[in-house]
Image (cartoon, rainbow, N blue to C red):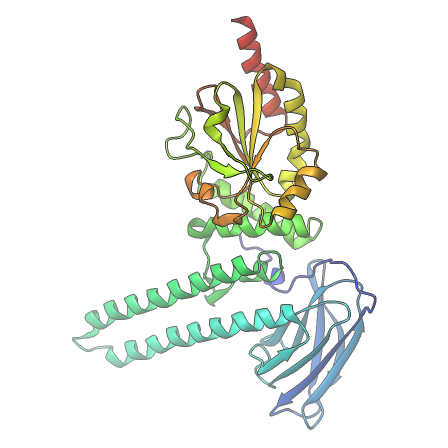
Length: 392
């Protein structure tokens, strides 16, 4: 499931280029080894390629200058164990100060926001690893003593608190940087080899959130495509055959939703009773949602006059992005609501939404009769429902 993740942690991404396509990296290393080489690696496809190297001066100074066409992840390293991952954009001039043998924990960074964010996370991770390592010393000190069982129980509780803290920190970090590839890096951090901070079984929603966001921002980037494939696999493995559904599942009444339209009027889901309704969850930043929207337009045009309605709930972050998505995809004909609270919207919890697009088909009494119907499956189900109605 985590195949090739090592490469994902130093991934490259295509963004809009700047007029100045040169990047500069100027470094000052403390306790340098004069003449030692420092390397600049770039991720290309699924390989790390060394694109330049320079000798460190006696004062610890070094510099790189390179022309790039798009934002990319680079690796600054002295060897395979001493490195710093950098997210560099065209036109950036990054300055770095670090100890020669500890590049991954720089003293200071400026000129590269992405690199700063990753270094900030690394400091928190390093603190957690130190705290966990300190517990081993306490264990060894009490090894062979009568107090060992009691000490081990205490250490287990302390360790769990440390792990809970870094898990929460990582989730907040992802939420704050969901549109950046640094969120992809955060998904696969470890406190020890093979000991991941986030687990697909417990934290699947975060893998899905990053997948949805990055698939929209970087749909053609190979590590993002690989993440999407892995999320699909995770979903299957974690919940085989399980449909996303509200508390009581199909044949239950859909929980009420009361949210504002783009014009500011509140429309209740229950106001659609008497129609066959597709309750659809989407967002303008969600690429799979945007791909599915033309199918919704087709279904609406075919069946609206016979009593088909769409009640579409957006998980957008801003009203402007939401309205633009509606206009760009020509979705103006049906009901749109949102509190523009992103994944923090209460409807996410009510309907147990872990990824989008997600939808529920409701009968004329507001009961759920199907979920996650997309493409031809939606068209087939609607044809079946309205054919039966016409025959009655």
